[in-house]
Image (cartoon, rainbow, N blue to C red; front, side, top):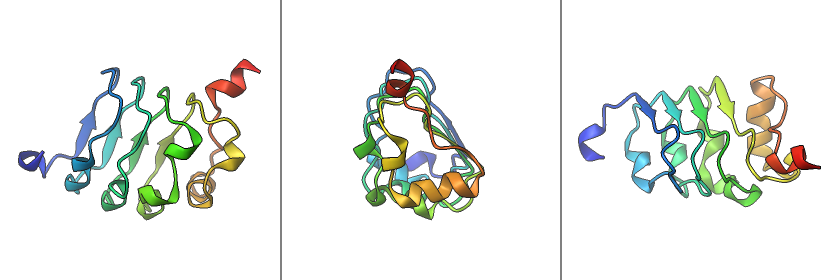
Length: 121
């Protein structure tokens, strides 16, 4: 990861990843993370908050449960986000998301993510 510090776009779509590595926080030039259709069940603790240039974060169709997206992950610091997708994750009730994450969706004028569990009921 150290050699990739200038990396701007990271596409790991459909790679069966179970997590994003903590070292992702070193990639401070990232503007886009495309990580949908994996098996990601957790985000790096405090690691996402350093990615202040991030404009696109696609995490849909993973295994992110409600507790995997919390205040400690630093998502509130991603003020340049323009595209943020958490759809089709087993989150349960999206109203239970942390307020900082709800504010991101409100700022982007998007509805809260639709859980894969919600689609089954």
